Image (cartoon, rainbow, N blue to C red; front, side):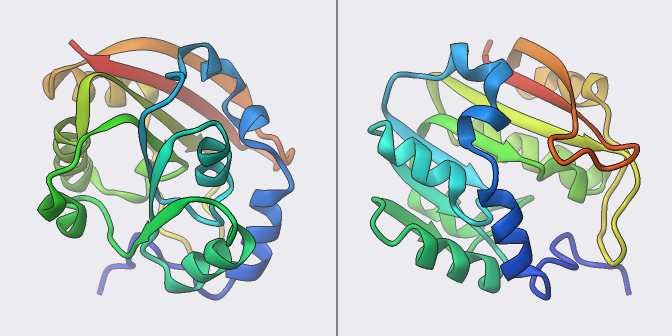
Length: 198
């Protein structure tokens, strides 16, 4: 039986939430912040501890946070109880709960999410992401490269492949940046991408 895309997160939810919260939204997404809409509706897919969702809510966005791991979602609700965030139990590649709500968003954020999906799932996920985007909206995406942590399911996903897939689904690249790992983990690096409807 193949490992689930969320494998390894439930058991480590408390420690992971602590790690996620040790850096800020502004630090993590610095290369893309010049493209951040001023306000609107934001969708944080794979929201984890809610760090980014809470930061976006504080900036005035109406935020929907999608997190499939119940333990992480509970940490997010606890840590950011005072933030105006709508939490959903849903997951890529198809986001069936969100798709049924027929909402569109000015910002779709995927931080360290896409590399958990295999090639077929990535294609389905990109179609769903594009469908959730408002005209003129933005997608911010970060890809992790390097060794796979024990017990996790990850794939080697390049920025080039992700851009090509986005283009197939009607998205144009606004920005691409490379970044070292904020936690200085050996061999780990990141690609940050921003897209908008073509």
